[in-house]
Length: 190
Image (cartoon, rainbow, N blue to C red; front, top):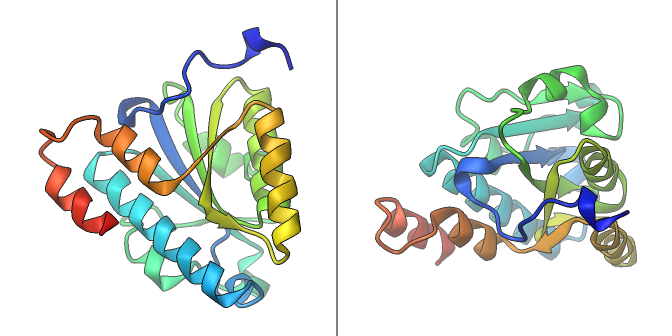
């Protein structure tokens, strides 16, 4: 990929971001390593709560929910009016309802969810191909096998994604300790 295709910033701003939560569903979560999965759910929850406080649009997907169940309740409770979008394609971008909800004026897409080496990877690569700057939150994605997550993060970084973490995203969105949401967001991180 040439450098002229990449966005000009390595920093995400709330005003230019959308959060996409990929397939954090009960049955899928049960297939992951328990301690790591609990951390991923906690970080996804923190991100969606911060997004709500900072008016960052949120999209959630569910991979074949008839078989894999609904979005984890720790995340679903914060989705507000954003009902998860069912999909069968591994790339969320291949689902027309997801494409329709992606806002053209939001050039930064923050991706979280599972699995890192399948749905997150394919979604990120499709979004990069559309000229979006993709931020993959390493502590909010997971794969059944840690080696697959590590491989996915390396591939994503080499493809032009920014591999980041929950706290970096939240505080980049916040921008300033004087922000009216600072105290509420600080509580999310503690």
